[in-house]
Image (cartoon, rainbow, N blue to C red; front, side):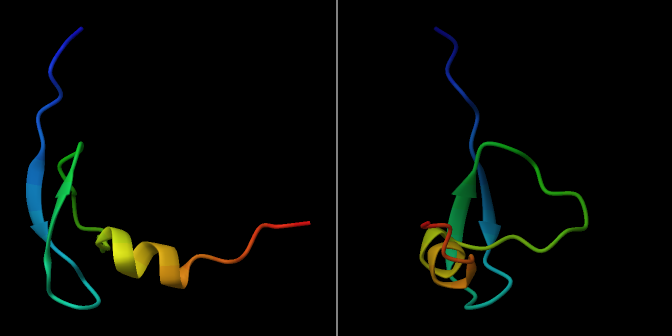
Length: 44
């Protein structure tokens, strides 16, 4: 199993450091906390 390289980025919303398995290219990136609080609720 390959080890996935993580990239340290700054959250676009709160400014905290976050790690992503991809290198962002011009798009806003959210930390896990901001991502969870901003995504729509998909429960049916």
